[in-house]
Amino acid sequence: MEHVIEEKATSLTFSDVVKGRLGGKTMTLCYQCGTCASSCPVAKITPRFNPREIIKLSLLGEKDEVISGDAIWLCCSCYNCQERCPQKVEIADVIYALRNIALKEGYIPNIYSEFASALLNDGRIVKVSRFVENKRPTIGLPPLQPTGVDALRKILSATGFDKLQQKKEGVS
Image (cartoon, rainbow, N blue to C red; front, top):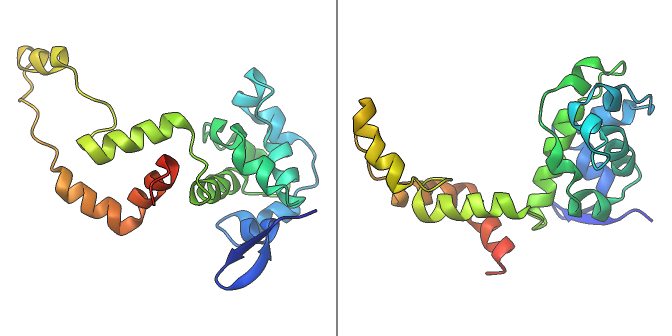
């Protein structure tokens, strides 16, 4: 049974929501030939990622399986699948759309959540170690300047990024 998502005060199926996003409309052209999967460097090294399977599940409306799993996060965005698709399905763009839906629903892999927390708290995704700070002058680099976290937080708040992170952390 296909899941229903409330969006813009109308009831849409999951596949309709995906089709309404950038590249999503083209997913209906997929006839499951497998060119995407055979072109994918990630699919070659792990059975956990198969772009053909993601498209199929999305078309079937299997929202929970698609957005709660880790498969959509394994895409390396090389666009091999999209460049080789005989039907011109915008597969990488569909993956981005699915990631955005997953984020909106609160499904964020821990590593991205950690990056988001660091960005919100420190203004940087990765903390700069004391060793790196001390090494900068020896290779002709200036000292690091403060990140301006307040300005960054305003931007992240304006885009709704901070709310996505709060949803992941269980804060309302």
